[in-house]
Image 1 (tube, rainbow, N blue to C red):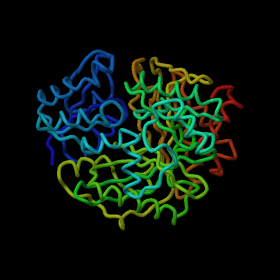
Image 2 (cartoon, helix red, strand yellow):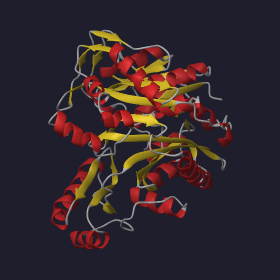
Image 3 (cartoon, rainbow, N blue to C red):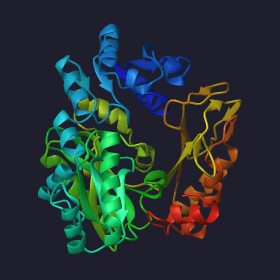
Image 4 (tube, rainbow, N blue to C red):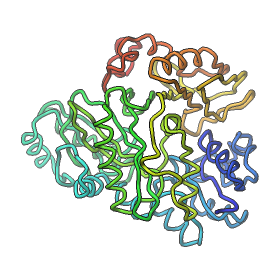
Length: 450
């Protein structure tokens, strides 16, 4: 087991890793930019190292600075959290070249799953169902139009290296293809340095279902059920729950086994999430995230496991502490992402927190790095907290979420809390009858903004 690990991240996820490490008796090193000198993860870690100015490119994304911080402090391993360097295969290779351990998948698995065309081809060979689409990259508009006519509209054009909703454009008809094709390529180039795109059939009313998988790198892997992340705005998740309200135990067991078997076949190590569109009883693979997800706490709640602790264990060479038969679902869990944003336009709202009070009580967890007097910097993602609730069933979890939102106090900045109060009054949300387009349609009607 490691004596000391460095967390190459900030905010609530850095705190999350620090807490798991502390319970395991492992020392922690926080890295931070000059803008984060007073951040809670810096205060909570055993040691801290400033790795650069506010810009992410010069601090949290600076590989030389992160490696130097390990050498200065004697950290043996690096936990990347999510975002930043968590899915950077080059970073993983450099970590290993310096005799350090990356707490996560291999560089090769990150590389394969990071390219969506390669990932889809790999998953097909492993027996994972995929969305109908182009066999590879689509180089010309003429080829794109031919594929659109062959598959039937609507279709979606996606940047090969895309993520976070960037580089994804829908062509409803043949007349839309040129605009969608050129825009997706341009966004791929500007955001990821790669203008290659591919085309898939666009499903009209799917749910977004993701399967949590975990492997030990030795040919053993398990699944930890699914999460329903269908309530999204511009492809960004805002409300996640487990288990999915539309998934039967039989469907869960079937797709879960397919995913676990696929991960075992490739000797996958650590946590991963295989994401699907689900429509009319069928699952269609869209991508794999080779890291811990923002919404991992809902899975932890219903299975009673600590995924970060497990990541650290297997990275150190230990076996997983559970097998598939040990994993039984207990109740229902929901997470809402609370952002420092001003409604109705969801514009970032950094500023000083004048008062903060986290909700509590049975079945309530608040993952946040906020504190009274903290100044939210304008340089990073607007996520400031995740409110997670757990109940014996979905109605109890919803009631608990309503109560906890009423207890939460975040003064000094605007947040997205009012959105969740409004959503909990909607019959479709209360019944679980929604798909990936529901929230944007609701926003257009109720807030005049999608």
